[in-house]
Length: 168
Image 1: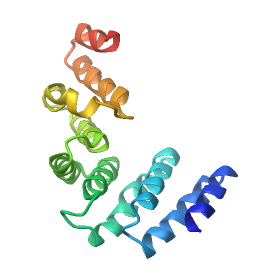
Image 2: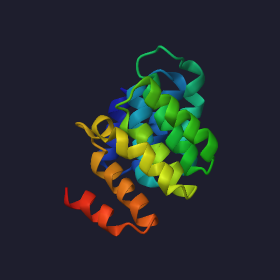
Image 3: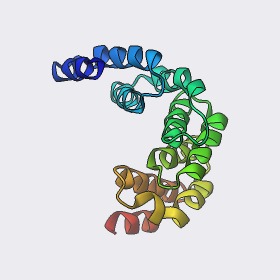
C-alpha cells in the first residue's frame, strides 16, 4: 500500500511527497530494496544530495554481506557519499559493491564520479576501460559511464580518444 501511495504521488507530480512516503517505508522496512532504490532515484532526480546519502545510511545497518541486493545498497550509498563530498568513503563503498557484483553499474558510476571529482582522469580510465565489457553489458547506465570515460580522456587532452568512444 505504501508503494502504491508513492506511485500515486509520482503520478500527480508530487516527487517530494513520493520520496517522503518511501523514506517512511524504508524506516519501517529497511530491507525493502524496491523502496530504497525508488527513493534513491527520486532523490537523484530532485537533486537531494543529503537524502541520496542519508536514506541509504539509515537502512544500511539492517543489511550485511551475503544478503541478496547488498551490493546495490553499497552502490547507492557510494553515490550518495560522493554527491555529499565524502570521496574516500564513496570510493571504498563503490569498489566493495563492484567486488560483490561486478555488473553493478551504479557502483561503477559512483567510483567514476569520485575519480572525476578528485581530478584523477588516468585512474578513471584505468577504472572503466579494462572492465567496459562488464559494466556496459545490458546496463541502463552504460551510455552515461561511457560518457564519463570520454570525459577522462578530455581531461587528459585526448579529444581523439573521446570522439572515438562517442562514435563507437
